[in-house]
Image (cartoon, rainbow over all chains, first blue to last red; front, side, top):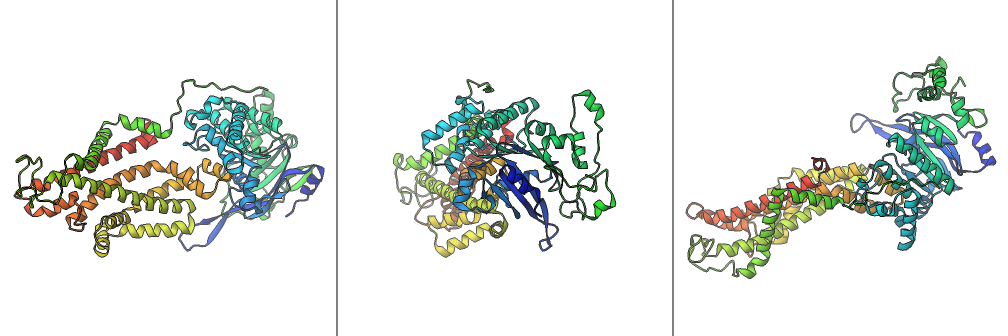
Length: 334
Length: 293
């Protein structure tokens, strides 16, 4: 299913990252040793593109496959099918030394600052790890880079020799950001980088990420379930549900004019400080649980929880179709 | 450019996880006492022969000289050999076998456990079935068969003990590897292009070590007991003295001259107890959940 829109986007302004029909599945064994293998499609035929210097957010609830999609893009989980084009290079087919070289271009910022840093390494060694395995810098150059990165993320030089457990959550996330920056990547995948931090620190880290984006011309793939954060950070948004993108569009169009019932429900759940807006906003509940990911229903995956559901939705799955410009929705009611 | 400054704790010490564990260990009196006893045994074994020299196989006095008489602090055994000299030489053998057997156990156990826990799939399936095979073998019987078949030399006894006692280490290592490989810092290392071998040896293994160290320490004690058991049954190198062998050779005289059996027995008991205390101390010091108390 090649989507018609990717070509148009390419012509306009060539994206740094283009993901086409990415599929990730996990074998699931149920019952005994000899039972039939079935597959859980964590990411099912997902396509998106990110322009250089911009931020694409992937949002969705837990288990929607957003993190798996990000891991597959970075070759940290094997994709079953699809294509990942990074600056003209087919990232999924690289092997060995080529893959190692290409890894300098993609780095990852992790969700949990408490498990993403090796407790036995000092802060400087954590940042040095990618330099050691991906670059051929001399020891002095490495130290210079580390000094510069520590200053860049707002940490002191004296803190380099401390161990991770001696830092706070926000400081640990800064170390993680410095590590991601060390190889001068073009794309940084941020997997819920602030969801484990408290709100005051969240703002600091988000501002840091934005400043770094401006300074280094970074491209972000930003995974989040927090729409408030997404609104602050991104240029375009992809909403995922049960491994599929259900709505995709630039930030303004998606936030002002959400089409998919799931997106509408998500947006209605964002608390607002503005009293007028709060009164306007109608809270939409989506009762129930997502369907069993191993035995997916035939029709739309959201049908079991959708307030607008009709018979057609249970019969066949709606395709992701363009409604205006770059805004695409997978719903019969759009 | 607005760089957000974070306050630096000016007095913050770079306390490594291992340094902190040692601090905890030092506070544990029982473990420190165990360590002290172990040191004494080690010094006795290493320096003893130079301080109190003598041939452990030489008949020096009348048999069954009771301890304290005629200048023999621990008396003589049924062949008139000086028990103190035997005990000192036995300490060397017992400790050497304990350490080398534990080392062998840990090497086999870590290799099997690390490969199974890291690669999963058929590798794990194969290695774990192998582990279970060794786990259900009657340990003493199997090691007796090895020693009986291949000769009762010290390396063979070490091998026999190592081969039957690695499964617990393999299982612990596998469990730790399975837990740690899912942590984000391992994924981060992979994102940095660190090779699998380096991830196993330099990223996961150091973090998996604490429970393995504890197990290894206790393994030294059980290896000493195991060796004592084998030599009591006569399955030992007749040309070296070990504590178990002293007990074994004097066992007929246990009713008349019980000290010939009691003294080496006490040596084994005290040493193994000391090792257990050290092992427990290590467990408390290396276990982060207990550390908070």
